[in-house]
Amino acid sequence: MMQRAAVAVDALAAVDVAELDPAVLGEFVVGLHKLGDRLSGVTHRAVAVQGRTAAWRGQGARSHKQWLAQRC
Image (cartoon, rainbow, N blue to C red):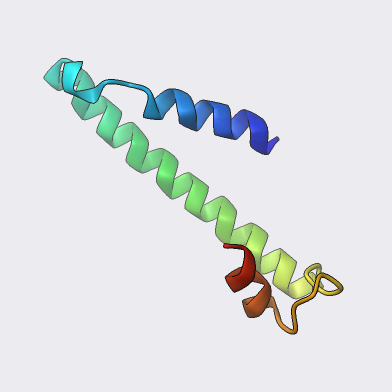
């Protein structure tokens, strides 16, 4: 799942934004912001569930906050 997401992000990162028509560039910027907002929402939900279920335990951290700090 994360591999497919990384490939999609790589494709967006490869766009030569300096070559985009101004209208297309505007759509690109708005689209990136919308995708970023969606990704942030998914991230917050996943972190909340991980913290609530203590899924981080047994992985060498003393707290969820520490687990996140060590890996992110």
